[in-house]
Length: 380
Figure 1 (cartoon, rainbow, N blue to C red):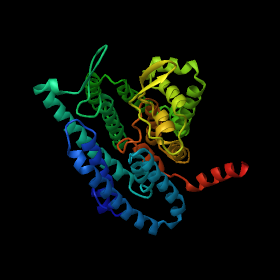
Figure 2: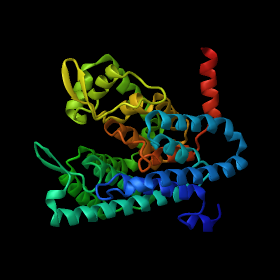
Figure 3: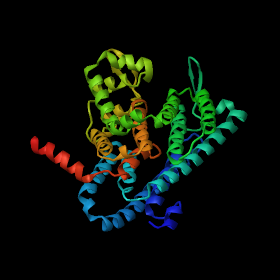
């Protein structure tokens, strides 16, 4: 890409396809769009696929060696779509695979600007309704007060969008001052007041990691080990849930408000899924003579049981065989993504997968990937 293309927000079919995906998110995942999503869902899906098909043709002309690697993964995305009736895995695969060789900073800026626009619109709508029509707001009553969705589908979604905006801001800005962090802290406290989402505290973790950036021993360990964090947390979640280890209940009570223990219930009811299982995560299920709803809020559990182990395996591979260790900021993104996935099941959302795009676009080695798994297959 030349400099003029890098500066343009929308310069090719990839950018337009990604924009249509984000528009789909915007109108489909808020409380004010009404029936607009019904009319635009299929046109947006088809237009997105046309844009990525156009980009894929040109991509494979430039990099024909990637065809044997990309086509099976694209087939997995299509198969998953027909299995579970949701295009989010297919969207994620398209966004990640075809980011290879592109300007990663441009992609991050585009994501940041569009997410910021969506966030501002939703907050303005929420503020207007909160002042003039408070009885119409979507709320959940808890022991400590009300949780507001803030024009998103849920309070947790509102919190997640704010958290990832801060993550993106931190990655894109080379210089951050204490004034910036004070403003972020004030907005975070406001978001916590309305959403009551403990996930907001991940911003505090980001601040601490940022503060330790000059401590060489911490910097060294985070850069080297963060790419294994996703795999470690995924394996740990599965082992604890499969063994029904008491530690999972302790962790749930201390940090995860019941999210991890739901993996135990889902594993016993449905078992692992390789390519996806169209389970209803909001219906009532009976387990050990107790009937309760299954939300499956942990991202690792969600991928193991609903969206498929294959995609979880691919994400873990991207992190392991990437070169994120070359950058402290990339390593922070990788580590925080792995940690957030413990508590959030919407980590495959197009506005949340940018850490995977960063890892894949920042030196993911197809050669090392092939060598490692070819060696495993030969041993078997």
